[in-house]
Length: 69
Image (cartoon, rainbow, N blue to C red; front, top):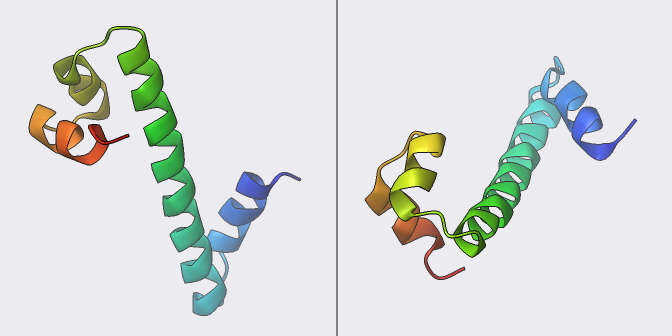
């Protein structure tokens, strides 16, 4: 089983410490994946507005979070 699948399983744990730790790790993974894909989109000429639309966020929020990447 891969790490993401392991984390998903742990996030459903009845043990709150294990579950919450897995949720934190999944958030960190999602943030890293988002940064990679935003950079990919920008490299391909996507506008901040187009990226924001897919992520269902405001253009300003996406730009603020990722413009330094």
